[in-house]
Amino acid sequence: MSEQELFNISQVCENLIGEFPELTVSKIRYLESQGLISPLRTESGYRKFSTDDLEQLVWILRQQRDYFVPLRTLKERLERNGVDFKSSAESNTSDSKVVGGKDPVVTGISLDIDGLSRASGVPTEKIQELIELGVVKGRQVGSKEIFEGDSLLTIRAAKRLFELGMETRHLRMYLVAAQREAGVIEQLFSAKTKSGDVESRTEAKRELDEVVVLGREIHKCLLKLSLDGLETW
Image (spheres, rainbow, N blue to C red):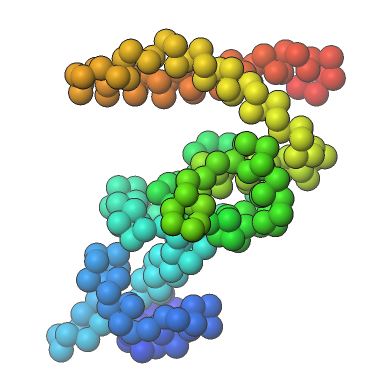
């Protein structure tokens, strides 16, 4: 398909209806009205979509379908950083074996347990084990338990650990270590985070984020040091 090829809105629907059966012309128009897509307009006012527009639309629809990302969050992400739609599509569908950093896909999402299962590829029964262990926590919204992006990151990491031979019960060591670390940090930052001064609370939040990052680095170094006898590094 040539990059110069243009499609009208009906052709866009026809091209994408296989993957998105509920897609309608009205839905596409709505996404445009919300500023998420900006197709060309002919002199007569007809919309014309390029292949780049189609890739952007597919990315948006997949984010909604697979990760339940709010349109507001998608728009902010597009405006703030831009998105490599081809790379994002590949990374979202690949079964990555490397877990690290903050995945932008999980920012601002809310999923029930079935949504977590679809997004992570982990069966709901296994996710339920992680919930019962306490390494994944949700919040009750009506009759459903809803989970945020960090839960998805945890489950993705756990999935790879399972592939490497760990069992659910082994993840308790991470929970215990995190709880102990959190207890110490809470003692140090409790007064700052409860300050009536907005500027002080903002600074405390920045420092708290930095402490978390630094703690992660120290943990990594100490773990390597403790495993030195395995001669794997």
